[in-house]
Image (cartoon, rainbow, N blue to C red):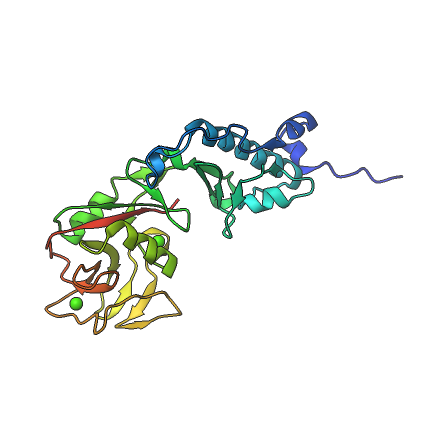
Length: 272
Ligand SMILES: [Ca+2]
Ligand SMILES: [Ca+2]
């Protein structure tokens, strides 16, 4: 007696061949026709082009899942599948992380699903006002002001996108540091997330995906973490337990009292 072939997993979820074929789609079917306000992704390019690509990517993810039984975690997985679950037109590129798809005047960020859930996608044109997409696909905004670190942390958490809340920026790479400094500029101080309030000298991120991770022991990097301290910092001069970018030392980190409201705002990061 011959064995009965195992039923494909996709059949358990009701996929049909027609659905899978229909979902093999072309990203970027609408081209950008206007660029407004270069440098502000919330008003750059055409939202229609990005929205069409977003719909295409979502359909591509469905196709990928239908043919493999697992959700894609990068655009690259979809474009390199056999057959491809997603095709890109000339000029559209995926970055090395596989999570940023850039077309003419727009960027589409892929947000992998948690615990095997389907990914979601965010158009740069959907970013909250004032936010721009950083080198890791996260959204960032510098907010000017004069406030303590706890007030800044609370304010950062009022922003959200794609179902994720904002937090004070956690800087884990030179690329992220360079990007964040480009938002803050050399004339401003700005709160970041890090703190050694619990144990002096043990610097940890307290929010975002890195919450609880120690990145520095005094001035010294821990586990190859990115650090960017100014010379002689942190110095805990008068009980300094919060991390900021200090305009006296542009583009470098300093520790200050968390209650120091000396003319500084904050950088909010939405880790999507
Ligand atoms: Ca970060
Ligand atoms: Ca200091």
